[in-house]
Length: 412
Image (cartoon, rainbow, N blue to C red):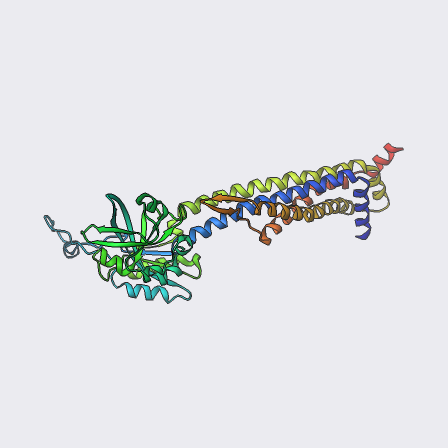
């Protein structure tokens, strides 16, 4: 093996220009593979993180996927009876026995559940009316369940507890009403109840999907304004392991009957698109490495053509076919390993450059999300090594089949 390694190194050293070009090809391929994959994987991870954190991992509402049967249907459903002119039973909306549901959700280690009540009101100020979906929350728990606090431009969620009639709305809605922090607006519910609410917080523009149409008040304030005392119609649950949300949601729905949606169910269409995106991404970046492997193939193939006489001499003095194959495969491995190391350095530099770029979005500087995990480095190295071995093995196999008698006779 030391002798075969020495011969391979000598071959590469004698053809420095081609060897350097092959190494640069591998390095560029690995470097751009790392940069592109870091950008795409990082953006996907950031998107999924935002998707998970944008709302509670599980949302339980007072909806029922399959409506309960009416009493008449239950009693006479199997009989030869036709029911006509009967009045369907109506029930007051809201989650019944919701403290038991919250307690059941919080049994799981590290989970927290926050109950809320939502409804529609109309904000009025100086003859200007704006519809608002008001959401009554418990600030102490909502801070731990959602990202509302981090999306606030001004104020804090706990200000709802310290200010009578406190209200948090989006910057867009506040601008349309012409109000700011500390201003008072009148809120009228569908039942006609009217309250004066004071602006104690503003949600950042464009940071949340509900910022333009919804506002937050204290839970008991919403129950009083909507005239639904002790009623809640939504429970948000945050789990320690967000990827367990689907199974937990199914257990809660089976036990309590209310619709429980995990973040996976709410985002199923988006997640399916990401699978297709991953296939496209790895196809593109793999093509980069494949192109780089042609440099190894060219270098080794040229070496085989130029060293035909040397190959014949080696065969005539006792080197086997496998020995000659190994020589040229070692050449490909040397080029691949050096190219991988240089490619890692190039990729790290490209990622550092991309990570330093700033983009102003909604008045704030945003940076490109990049994945700096070891996984991408290992994928690039493994793919390059495999490509390098295959690219070197193809011409090496041709070299091993050379007939030394024919070559030496022709040379003579």
